[in-house]
Image (cartoon, rainbow over all chains, first blue to last red; front, side, top):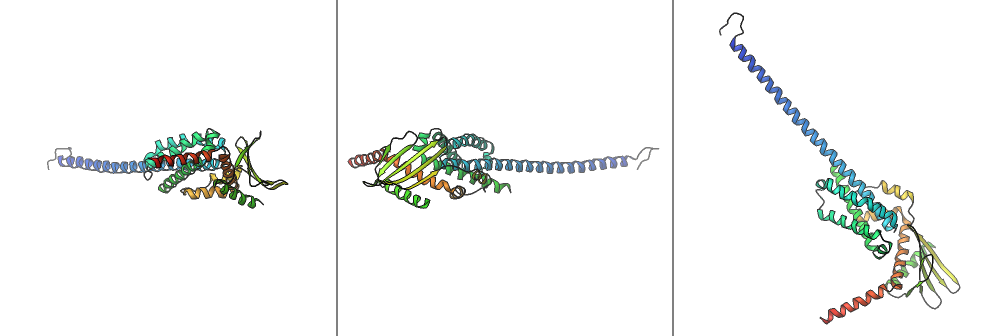
Length: 160
Length: 146
């Protein structure tokens, strides 16, 4: 070791630099670990919120579906038609937004719901047509309602 | 009294579906009305009155001396029914939905029964049933011919 007046020994300087670097590295690793954990937590929270939103959307659709079933069964065309006008676009929107959450539901089932709502809407728009297709209209409303409540139930279970 | 009307409504429906009652249209300015003669003295009238979404179906069994039995059913849905439906449980089967609707609105079952009688009477009176039977018969003949 060579001491030159008041100068700091070269080895000390090297050790000091190395120590600072090591501490910096450790702090960086800790920061990365914390950031990764935070990111994971944020992603988890975002997914949970998304699942909850999907579940709430389909619960509302299921509730509308049961009401539509009731009013169709009671042959109350005006009220049923009004519900149908809300339910159809809401279903299309929910399917588009939350389609990937519906992992246990086949696209065929979703197409069936859409088809039933479409036919029902047409029959509800005309009392003569409705009378002619009364039993089919009741079945379409009942099937849609049951399918929507089934999906809402599944999403509610996944949310827990 | 109402149970007896419902029991008779079921019997009338079965008899109509079996093609044993000849319903005919009765001109009426305020409602749709059909009549079927059971024999020379006794007859049945089924009448549907519509005002907006409200429908009332009346079933009247009469003879020459007057009305023997009369029953009405309407499609009114109470506000409490709507409240029950707003808070019901999810993830149920179709049967459970039907049961739910029946339980919250028992009058609806009666209305649907009367409606079935009305629709059956109308099909017969307008010749839909006989036209369909004739079509099926013709189709069978065509099928046998090939």
